[in-house]
Length: 417
Image 1 (cartoon, rainbow, N blue to C red):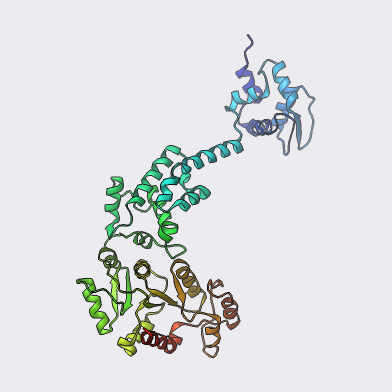
Image 2: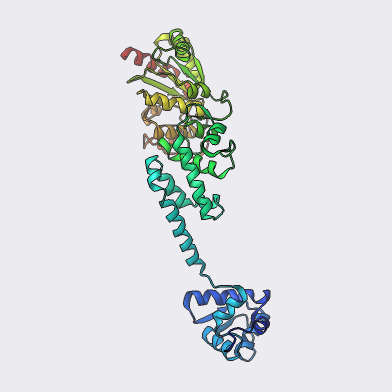
């Protein structure tokens, strides 16, 4: 029985690193066309000599080399080196695998893996998260390409999501309870990355920021990072339903018409019983507006919240609570490009309306000065004509310039209530 491969002769004829490119190109040609003619450009002397020696062709000159794969296969068989070209290539470099077919098969296996968890994800309201993982390939990357590890990571992530929302639970406590490791949800851990992606974009509407910070992501699910006393939100005259403790303090602040700071810890550990069904709450970007309302309107000011620029975790948590309590939210911010970005994020996430943020409001202030607009222009989601109006003006319009108008709105809202 003939030996299918004479490996020593084959190594001398076609082996070695100097002919690796030739072997790779031959393998790709075989996989895609199962034959035909291969043309190599910028061919080396070693490659040319190997092919011409195998097929017994006289030496030629030139920068390219063309070889018929069927003729090369017959030459290998006639010489007793290998029964055909495929056998020879696999003996030297291992089984021939079509990279495209391998990628398709791998993609299908990962899609099947994700599909197995769809019913559970749908029950938790995060089925879009699975679609996101499938499109972006994040699960495969976090699992290091291991499907078994990918399955374990999904099981762990869903176990965490099953436990949420928490009521001011520390992140380490959540990790220990769900995963048996107090550090399993720390930044940099694979399961943490999966859970944070679900919370930021999909769980209960996601976080109202394009790239939310870690504290805001976990706060969205009622989870505290550390003590979370540094993330706070400034408020004015938010009504509560009696009670004691925090509600009593807030009632006193409302009666005195004094600004009140609420920390993220307070909002998550002791969420106030807000009395806001059908009540207007005005949200602004700059604390100067709230300070003037407290100073000049006192008890005649409508309830207010300040984002202080880009909203932090405490601001977002409070807005979620106010919306759930039935408040009617109104937002005003600076009419500059960063301000439009903040407004777009908030109005997309919450049932919130713009408050004097239209092109006609800008036109009414044409006489007011302003700094030159800086940054990338943005479309305002609530007013298709605002971008053009801002570009034509070319200058920002900041909240402090509209304080008189905004205060009048706050006074009138109380009068209508």
